[in-house]
Image 1: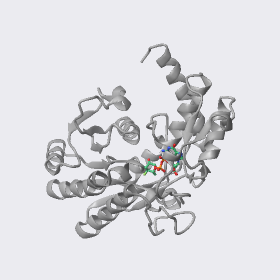
Image 2 (image 1 turned 45 degrees about the vertical axis):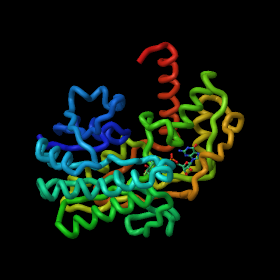
Image 3 (image 1 turned 90 degrees about the horizontal axis):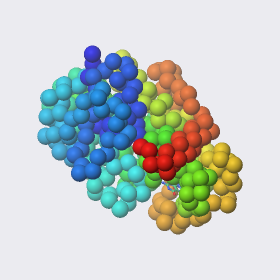
Length: 325
Ligand code: G4F
């Protein structure tokens, strides 16, 4: 039974990845930073099946100790400060976790067991002000936020450790991946939750920023399969993971509100606080390499994804109003 260590296991992608690896027969160890309030909601249903390791990407020794104790065959480094707007408020913290955290984990791999297979969660935010459309593994990066800059460092240090030390280190350049488990601050979930709340008369409006921003949105459950496939391949590499279709925030609102019989124009208001100092206007990925080399392809389409999220939020709000958990 192989052992997988997942950093960021309490996040959206971490929870889907833990489910996938558990189903495949792995011993799954989720690395978790201690907090005074519980953050294990997304993996509550898995806590009997997986093990939890205390550790923090800010703390080099905690990583070395976790690797020595659990002896993973594969490490999936998903932990990060991952909300783009926060990276302007806390650029140094973002760099510590999202950039230097990767080096600390790679150093732990080198120190404890260089044969470990390593996956780095890179991001389409690295493309930023895009140099070509669609974006591939060879498109130059031009990040537009401290988050994007930190992820670009994380990407290149992964490539560098592969080239310098012959580590089996892969970088998955994932485009936006969403699900009912997405945090409420991200735009898809903010909109799905608002559409459901407005339908159920819990609220009346929602304030959004740039409605013309366009993203290649896929389903997080599909994307974690690509992560796993990268570490099963004969040789390490970098892969774009995307659907190859892009939609604007406006189109997403149309689908979400339309799904519950509402017109988004009646409920979406402009919130200047949501406009970013430097915006990434348009992202669309070309995942041909992942398709051809790994045999990966997404299953859930955009409309299905947004409707799934609205349905889940309708159910959540109704359950909450009945005081059920
Ligand atoms: O949902 P978002 O906050 O996601 P963003 O910035 O594209 O980043 C996400 O995807 C990346 C790629 O996988 C990850 F690396 C990253 O960690 C994160 O998961 O915003 C999407 C777009 C932006 O252009 C933003 O300006 O939606 C626009 N937007 C418009 N109104 C809004 C809002 N975004 C948010 N969060 N909230 C709004 O009210």
